[in-house]
Image 1: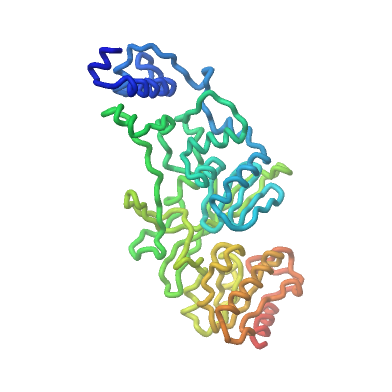
Image 2 (image 1 turned 120 degrees about the vertical axis):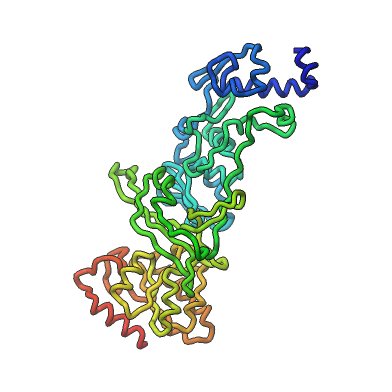
Length: 432
């Protein structure tokens, strides 16, 4: 050892740190005399190949920490505690609400049965390890160790499993196994010209507010193929968002997920609507379509907003959801039918000023959230209209029409309602 110290001109303190690194590397890859190809490629491990060390693998007495093992220990109560602890770091306003197996904080929502989460305002989705990673701004490994700690799992050491079982389902840029070694600047000096690489920096995708004119057409099966495959989603529709001048903002996609109901064990289809922006990676300058929220001047966009400018004399009909807009526009071509992105929780973040001085009818979904959303839109329109006659804004009384629960204009007409009656109703509201 002294000969090595003299030849390498390394202090005893640095040598101890180096030996500690080697111990961890042997745990991950085996010693240089074994059959581990990774170990043979490491220059500085080979330098100390004569030193006998014990090899460990996944079945050894000191097992590697795996996400699957941790996940089995995450009960609904533990998942709820994790959400309550970390959700405020993602979204510091709104209260936390629990409804059945769902817990939410404003637009931030998590399934207490499996830890899958979504932030409706931005379109972000992921599993519970990614949730902790984003909220605490830590690495994938650190997030895993936090979950293990909350689940009460004791271990002598933890490390990433390179077969991918520890990785978050959302993060496509996987961190290197070497990140678990926490190599500092001093340690990099010790390693010198080793074959080890620094962990990859997390991708930093920033959306364009308006898509450049020369962008390739968005193709979900091509641009989101990995995400769709991992989540087993099926794209049923895509919707194009433009501003009032016809400039492309981005898209939303409607995807269907087949899920097993935890209470009935029946397979049911769950709908998700996700925003897609054209983005630039600030680190690599790469540009592509990816899952990112749509914002223009900090406002949520309006679906079919370009029709507002094209048809300045048509009355406006506001419905909820892109699918309903497309259906209602075919049924009622005499109206400019629009909706907004993000659902009832982001109504105040929409620029309703584009409807100032226009005749507006709001047709809500036939449920309590739909009616509350309509009232909130009416309040926003009255604010932006100022002194203009507030009677320009009307809300359809869906209860008086005796409509089925959750019914909207994309659904089949009930027996007691016809298209002629709908047109007559809307026309009478415009005359008031």
